[in-house]
Amino acid sequence: MIRIALPNKGSLSEEAAILVKAAGYSVRRDSKELSVLDAANDVEFLFLRPRDIAVYVGKGIVDLGITGRDLLQDSTVEAAELLALGFGKSRFCYAVPNDSTLTVEQLNGHRIASSYPNIVKADMARRGFDCPVTKLDGAVEISIRLGVADAIADVVESGSTMRQAGLKPIGEPVMLSEAILIARSAERVSQPQIHSFLQRVQGILTARNYVIVEYDVPAKHLAEVCEITPGVESPTVSPLSKPEWFAVKSLVPRKELNGIIDRLEEHGAQGIIVMDLRTCRMHS
Image (cartoon, rainbow, N blue to C red; front, top):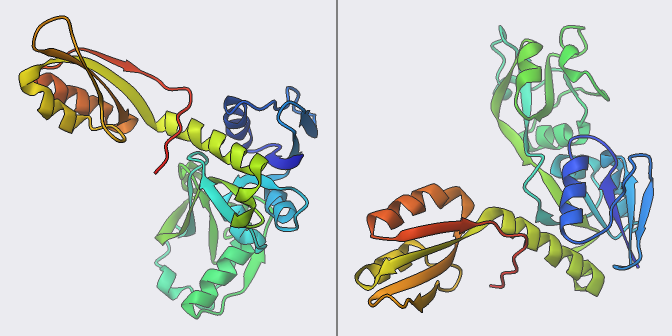
């Protein structure tokens, strides 16, 4: 049996549960449950604080975990990122009051407050700066007004919280974060149950990024439309009962779908149908 840690609350919790359930695993039905045993798949799910998950994975207490890239890096534990999960995306940035002229290049010697002190210290060391870093567990945005810091470093999603606090981001993001699947080491993937979980989750993520497009096209335009929808290896092409017409089926990126449909119509495609996928396995 393997043990997998999922966030028990916060912005990553709901999406992580949806992903794992879509991959065919049993997850908790009650937010108060601390663990769930999925006997059919020989997996125990533990619901832990997102900030603690990297620590449990790094120490080998659990086999896999879903947490944020920012939380993994701030934990400073040794763990491997196996897969980016595509949700919980954010930027980790420095910020100062709107009327401040301070830039990232001028932070040396200034006080910085953050809930992620280790990320800040590592970035300051990389820049050769010596800055006092104050760790705060929350309400980092108000620390400048209270005289605790000259600048803050925090996770930015929409940026609305910073704007409401009268702050502006400065410089390029220190890092781009999102939900990730982690293990103590990449070698753990060779374990059958871990490999199976990884493949199932990857299948769901792939399905979210692609759709199936089916359409009919006259033979004179077949080569052109196949270039528009080449698929993963090649599109499926079948002759129709109508002479000199073919049916084509192909996998296409979801984000490019509308442009692809426009181009297919321009090249004579008719009866265009789009279907969602539940899961999809691709092998390079």
